Image (cartoon, rainbow, N blue to C red; front, side, top):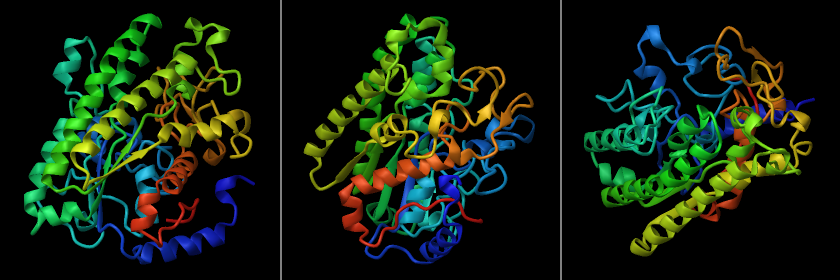
Length: 384
């Protein structure tokens, strides 16, 4: 039986209990910035009905919500598992509720500014480098502008921010994804993304400092994932790669994973710099890279087996991915049990992989458990 489906009744019971009681002494809300790894519906709400994104079509959302919600997965994302573990409702997308403060399960408990396809750097900067965003012209700067418009609508916005857990991303991945996804060789995009990493990290740092000025006290900053293990890039660079460029333990592309580690090191250096300037602020680094690398190194242990590098939803090739026939299109097919796969659509993870990642993050960031002593571990599939 698949991991995510074990002990169904126990998970159902514990999830109901968790959603009914906030972890004592904990954060009062969750505020999120980022891209498709955190977007809970903003891109969907921004698009006109005749131009919906792929994440608005089945089989997206099939596992947990049983319909597409604008999340780029079959179910919940890391942000959803973090909110649940803190005893909070899912973080609502900002788009569609800009002019009102929703009560109960709305903006009073948090707000999500993340937009699928968003970059850290603005589109004019990227276009000067020959990089074009096919999904949106929104960037982290636009999300910060939204937040600055939102904060004054609260009775005491600074206090609200001081008591919130702020999630800064993951953001920056798309600045690298767009030149990598459409590459016709390896050398040119490799050089380009290397040159983009410093300004990407610098802008993330500037945004964090802006939030600190506005009153943020706790900011969780995720790093990049091991992108050399994603079906999109294993497919894209298969014809350009020699055998010695793959990690023999995982089958992942070393140079792409090395780039992720380079980005992550720059990001950690930037957080160290900011922390010295603002010792009263809790800057928490979320190690997405190693949280995900666990199941690439030991896929059998986590129930993924020899499917760990294959997409659940897609079509064709050794990694079940084709950029011309992606999940959400008529050509693509979906696996029977997404919980047996780490990759959902070749670019994003399955709910089960996100659950494992969220679990690892919450287990390895002591500050959150200190602030929220009754925090629960992320649980698997249950009826919504």
